Image 1 (tube, rainbow, N blue to C red):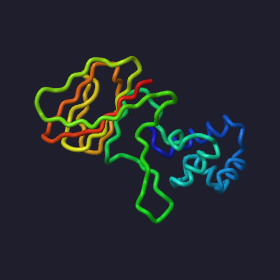
Image 2 (image 1 turned 90 degrees about the horizontal axis):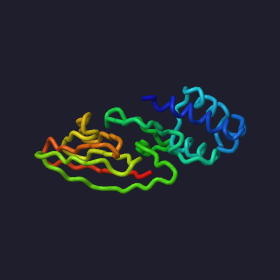
Image 3 (image 1 turned 90 degrees about the vertical axis):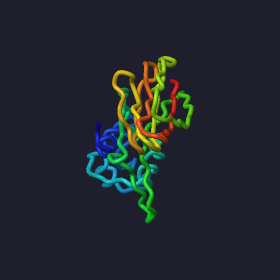
Image 4 (image 1 turned 180 degrees about the horizontal axis):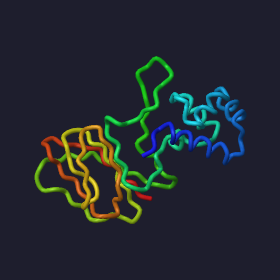
Length: 183
């Protein structure tokens, strides 16, 4: 998985060039310095949420486009490894994008509560379905039936929902947020 700075650098440059904008023009429209844009495009900058929002507005792309992993394989983000983009203000606030919704997708959000015992085995859903899970409490083996991953509170996992998958609580009081994305 690419680190956040590398993803931002790659995406920022790609989006700027796709619009035929110079570094100077992007900086002017976003209200940031040319040096800031240059540093971000080389992966050496450390942007704030506000800077990325301003760049997104200037490029006419959502914030999520600048920070999304954009991978089709299962994505696992451990709570301890999550990279957030901090606010430039004094507030203790950061934004960690776990997954951006693709254009035209439908997302249904569920709260899951499960206890140890028989695993919940799911048959494949509609073709193109992706499931996203954030474990809230307890512990569970979740994901592709043949390759489930043990998650702890705060961990995030996405996987193909159009293949057999499983949710198996391994501790009492297990709960999760599950988002089913239909493309």
